[in-house]
Amino acid sequence: MPEHTARGRTAVVIGGGLAGMLAVVALRGHVETITVVERDRYPAGHAFRKGVPQAHHLHILLSGGQRALERLLPGTVAALTDAGARSLYLPRDLLTRTPTGWQRRFDERRHPTLSVTRPVLDAVVRERALRALGPTTRVEVLEATEAVGLLGDARRVAGVTVRDRATGTSRPLPADLVVDASGRGSRTPQWYAELGREAPREETVDSGLAYATRMYRPTDEDGEPETAVNVPGWPECPRGAAYLPVEGGNWLLTLSGVTGHHPPTDEAEFAAFSATIGDPYVHELLTRAEPVSPVHGFRDTRNRRRHYDHPGALPEGLLVLGDANCTFNPVYGQGMSVAALGAVALRDTLDAAGGPGPGVLARAQRAVGRAAESAWMAAVGADRPYAHGTEAKAGPGERLMSWYLDRLAARAAVDRVVGGAFRDVFCLTAPPARLMAPRVLLRTVFLPRRPGLPRPPGTVETT
Ligand SMILES: Cc1cc2nc3c(=O)[nH]c(=O)nc-3n(C[C@H](O)[C@H](O)[C@H](O)COP(=O)(O)OP(=O)(O)OC[C@H]3O[C@@H](n4cnc5c(N)ncnc54)[C@H](O)[C@@H]3O)c2cc1C
Image (spheres, rainbow, N blue to C red):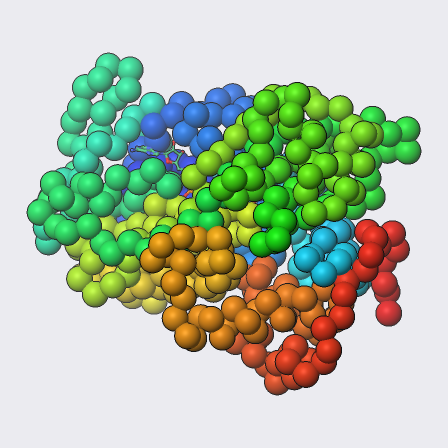
């Protein structure tokens, strides 16, 4: 990076979570100082913290997210594995029950998926992101400090107002550029009003899904289950369960259900709910495990994107990243990967432009929007049948696509070629166009529908 691009420029990153830390990496070399403003105080070790309440729930990092993370912070996937993260190849190590039966267990090794608790993931990424800073960029983290507003005017953001949570005192923190990485509770739309701007256009599709999660430890004499399990809900049975290993020999069980089928957070009722999902297999596994944590619930799982990428929707000096920009129904496991892909898009745009000159952040915001597009289409397409009111209305193009994707998903459970393309797109390593490749399209449309396997497959299909 040419050093002159960094001279004199200051950046503030709101939120020292995953997207905030990746923003720090993306800005490296393009500014002289970065101040991360984080509302929480980071706990010692790998403890949960209040600012990331979703951290109690199952989090997988898709192969597309891992690639992005590696581009930003090489060696991080190995560091996560060293910290106990479990790497599961799809579909070999994650048995999935689809509406038509169990998915075949092909020995495909293209999509390693990391399963790890959020406190470990966040701590490993944070430690590496802060350590990686080179001599041209100085970084400071203001813990227990909250951003409470933006400085500047309708045309240009010039910093943030911060409040020290211990003393309650507020002060301005001027900066040449501000990245909002404050997560799903971002207040930038409200702060826009104080700057005299209209809030960005917002799209939402809400399936009404709720989560409840509990940690277990297998008690089986033969050890832990050989594979992880995913039984997502489907329209006729909108209750699901995912049971995956994490570090330390523990497993996380996340139960989910749409409105009218929300999983209980009551400890006595929790395991019983797992017997009401589309297949008894997960419930059977629970008889060989004991709970080692309370049950945690999570309700707001809507897909929501704010169009900061639309023309004129962003003042100079601002960029919005991660969940602050776009949140997804977590059941598809995409949010962290999209945050990482967005940070790569930010870095690539800054690198190409030689730094954050006029108009560059708006260009970067468009690239961040493009990085979220595939995941958005997948999540919204799958959730539309559960949505209500205007959110439920799909255009003719989307209806045709839903018909096709429904057929494709059923075929993917039993067909290597279609399944491979499906995973490439849903793991965010290939664009949605991969699903329209001639041999995928022909197999999806013209081969007859075949059911999946009647029982969870015990052996891997190597040929
Ligand atoms: C139940 C659930 C399960 C999920 N499972 C998955 C999964 O399996 N795979 C996946 O990829 N994604 C998953 N996600 C999505 C994932 O959690 C998010 O995409 C990810 O955390 C986004 O990172 P972020 O840094 O944008 O936000 P966060 O991780 O939420 O971090 C935001 C940070 O900003 C701080 N902050 C907030 N406001 C302020 C302020 N005003 N001033 C200063 N600091 C502030 C917070 O304290 C926090 O540190 C799941 C989400 C949910 C809700």
